[in-house]
Length: 255
Image (cartoon, rainbow, N blue to C red; front, side):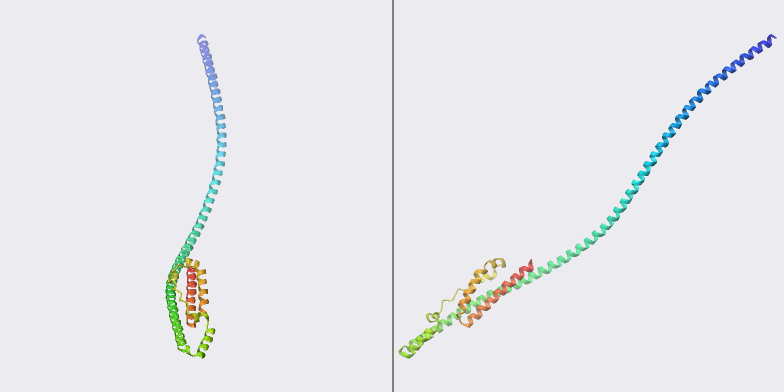
């Protein structure tokens, strides 16, 4: 009996020990479950935050992709515009080279034309100087002829001074003759300076008024001379006018 009672006591003690162990295990399990529950809640919260971040990142990625597409479109437009401008630059460069070539050809042509006109002007200037010298020589010859013609009537008048009728006839003839022929011819003018014809056109334009006045006086005097002197003077005047016209044409072509 005592052995059975001790066995019962030992069994009860074992049962109590097992129960205490079970209670302890349950408490441990509850604390573990509580920790797991808190960990799950924390993970759920973190997942929610991660999802929000992911959505924000996706929105940002879409925005960046849209901006990138816009930049690519702008870049393609700029490339097309650059290609068009390159074509225009090539066209303008070709046109500029063509214009430059034409300008150089025109400049060369005008330079050649100016050289030819200057040569022609030099020849005409030399011809005008030569004609001026010829005019002066003709005037001197005309003056000498007048002196000879004036001496001959004077000698014939001395021989016929004994005859009254011829003397009266001579006096009447002298009344009909101009005074300058009766008194004797005027002294010939000095030879004009040929250097006037070698002046540049700009300086010669300043000397035109006195030259014209001198030409008018010369024409007034030549109207009283013989036909030979008048023809030579008109020839010199024509050459001078032609020289001035050629000089003006040369300057206009040079401009």
